[in-house]
Length: 380
Image (cartoon, rainbow, N blue to C red; front, side, top):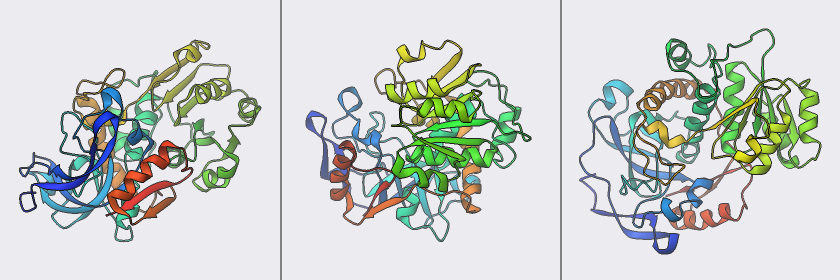
């Protein structure tokens, strides 16, 4: 980073919880930590979480944004040897924006930094816009499925599968789930058309599970195109009972990619009569969870995989989690393998070439829920 000006254009925390376009934002430190890489950003991806950096989550002057793609400008020690990433490579990265511990590093900027274990080399047929759309979903979702829920990754997800099998760590919600190759277990994906939902559908199918998704009626074809075996309209008052009928009242696993009281309740009503497991990607309603004591419930936080302290308020604040980082290192190698083999798809994208100024307006569109079934991408 030392070869560029000491300031850059970026979207940063502004006054009164606002996000502002700054042309004098700080450039990330010129000296890279071991295992990290510096990137000139070419495209950024927007997420609902980017609109929720309010109150104690908001840091004035900190650069926002969690997902980007670009060109590697410098590498720290060990990056090339362990990750085969060199200067000039095209990469996508998933990081923690609006980070009070690292305010100079965020996705919504001309230059950024990422740990190599959260970066992926892009295939030749991936544009920067396409690469920016991989993002945090592809780290958060496997953490929820294969650690929290305890589902078996299966032989197609190596090296993660062997690593989990040899791990002495127990899943959050119970014992490890042995894969049934004769009669695949069903998993409910609530919010199947979201970026995390389409990711969950694909990973579950690769792992060997049967997938049931909830979505809006207009996105039924979309979730089935990603591999869902069945799709149900969440707005249908009979949705939960229809899922119970489809699964013969035996559904045991649910991942909630939306996490509202309504989606939590739907998942709980859809789970079968025997013990079940529910994991969400945000804190869920404890009052709803208390209605069924036989269901084990938990939620995960994607940035935990960085292995660093998360200095956000409760309940999102976290101490550094070395195990989560170890999981991420192994998972990143698994994900790179899937990407190289052409086995994963990103959510459909809505790409605009209006840069960071356009991205500022895009955040308002997401806040107003004007984007559905698509990933909003801005090229710089």
